[in-house]
Image 1 (cartoon, rainbow, N blue to C red):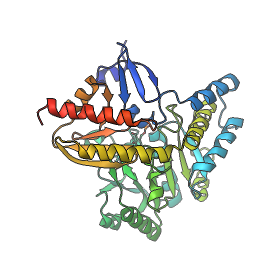
Image 2: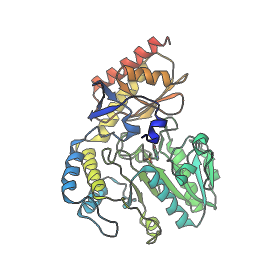
Image 3: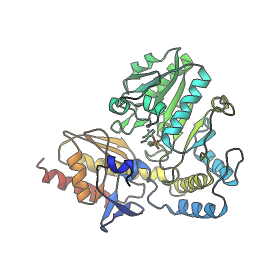
Image 4: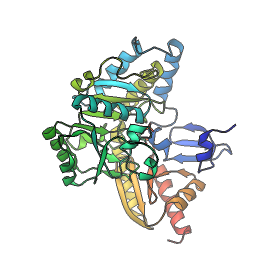
Length: 378
Ligand SMILES: Cc1ncc(COP(=O)(O)O)c(C=O)c1O
């Protein structure tokens, strides 16, 4: 018996346990986790408030069809109202990032009656057919049917010229993750906002990876002073429990009528409990401030490293280290030395640690990088 994941597996590590910023493998070795399941464990492994909320909810009610509502969903909405942008107070719960992107696109198609989407080179939005269509990497899209999508250059103001009266939506990450940790410049987002307003198109910010405190703000776009019509979020919101949502302007979500969208598990009571625990952690532990502070320290220490480094990029604890060559040997060496990281493309190391990493962890990570560069003769 084998799962598809076994065939795709590239790294042999078998993880058995996690606690806060660390994970342990089946041999009992401890790793500093700066991979965090592509960011899903940003609140750490086993965040206490999420565990508590899940345990309590599990005893009460696990399934509640979306035809009814649950007490925990109201608690979740109340807490969400404290962290969502004021103009995006209407929420639809989903289960994964890709589903949230699908729904955001559906809202835009429905609201405008148009079919065309503008997306960006380097962008990543998921693997189901709609979100895959707006994902840049041609290797991921090859062989699959697509929506009507045009890709423009990220961070180029003239890209906004591609928005016209046939455009339903513009979808963009305020900080590109998979595309190499590339922060959007404020003027670029501002131009997209203007072009959408001028042409009646819907602006979607995909904050699945950049959102929920990682960049030093609750939502990465908030530091740029530009508001979208809809925003997607997911990954770490439920402390690693699979959750996602679309937060949109009221008129946009109201455009979807009964039967036009649905989800068996969207807004599941456990998912709502996990989000409640996630939001409490975000607020009570001052996660954005800590990300900002620790991320600045990490970025400045990476900038001091000697090695084959082309550029250090990032915001808060969403950090990319672009190297002159391929990063695979570096990623493997770090793993052997007790640090887990991921890649963003072939030459960028993606460092996505949990918000509670300590100064000691940052010294450990940079020391292991330095050892790797020395070993590899750079
Ligand atoms: C910006 C962004 N959007 C969407 C997705 C898709 O999320 P999921 O893997 O939960 O479907 C991801 C996943 O990495 C992402 O980074």
